Image (cartoon, rainbow, N blue to C red; front, side):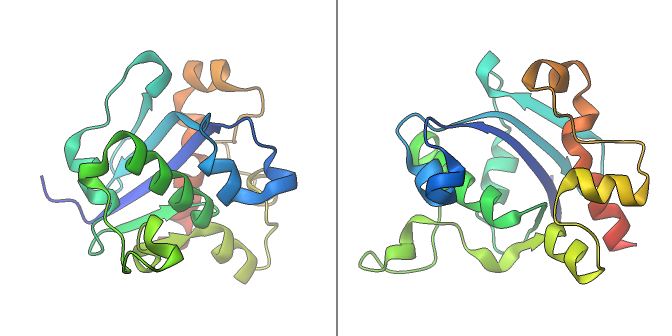
Length: 171
């Protein structure tokens, strides 16, 4: 399977308060985990992998995360990239690739050049900087769920609300 583009949304957990410490410390916690990994490959149907239930992300997708020729889309892509960098190094080091030498502090993160951020596109278009705000302004049917993991598992398409934005910005 040849992949050209991924649209990604994560639901994560950390014992570190992101509002006090930021995304890097949040994702670097020993207790950090990705709970749900939502992805659309080349604008195809959305698949949600429940990592808490033992779902495995296919190797083609894992390899695509560090492939600089494949575009990765996400709302607040920096957060997704940092989280996936730490998660890949911890769970699938064979798929992790960085872009600098061992003595460089950014060696622990995936290459940012292949990541596109729909939050930045939203800002450029004068839209709010939150998923909920963008959804309200654009009156999208698909809305990011606030009620937590159980509802997202019940309504898996809601996890890929950023995917809906990707389609708007690509068109």
